Image (cartoon, rainbow, N blue to C red):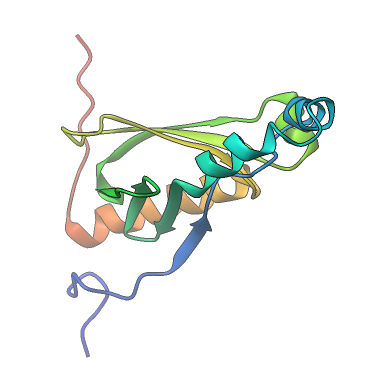
Length: 145
């Protein structure tokens, strides 16, 4: 039997799988009410065009409605996390994550307006990143200039 450190294709556990919230804050809700729902159409189209899949090994962001683009970042490349929960988003239970990575094509990844407990997701993501680094034998060195 192989240990998790020996098997690079270990089972992935999904931490989050979904799209941005259609109504992420009270401000957007008020705009929808004032415009009699017309503001909901562009919000729906934008939310339909983004899909996030966060697992214990990688983050996959698929964008586009008609034409699709997929960006994948392995968790061991994530360097820093920022949780952003503006007041109006907190009222409706959504939030944002900002990830700084060592990925050349995506040095900064914004996961915005997701309807989940972003603080709990941050903790799960942080732990999964450390486990992925240990499994791959990756060490991070911070140089100060």
